[in-house]
Length: 161
Ligand SMILES: [Zn+2]
Image 1 (spheres, protein in one colour):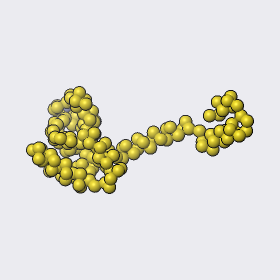
Image 2: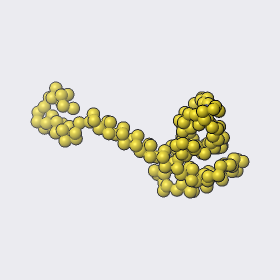
Image 3: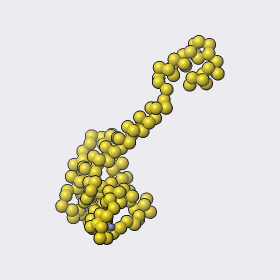
């Protein structure tokens, strides 16, 4: 994972401007300086981070944390406020404070919402793709009934299953 985060992008040129992004990890906050000549969102994703906004994000969240929180909110009542206040307190005790003008809650909530939306979209498209190759349930069970009760042989089963 650390090798991915060390992907070197442009840090400043005439085609873009400098953009500072606060990157939230489980145990620390890092500040990255990106150049806007290349999509900041794509640069962040290359480093395993998910931006809070598509164009000029001020904050990005570790994908591992988003996956963890997404799973937590499946098993427990979703509460972004409680998560963010706990995280801010935990990081604050380790002397990590956000210097951005946007609150952690607002930016984290946006990153979480778009991350969850993309994961749902991916799962939906994957399910649709796999459905193309599945036999209809009635066809499949009908052939099994024919084999089991109609005296079908192994050759018949292989043809239809
Ligand atoms: Zn640049």
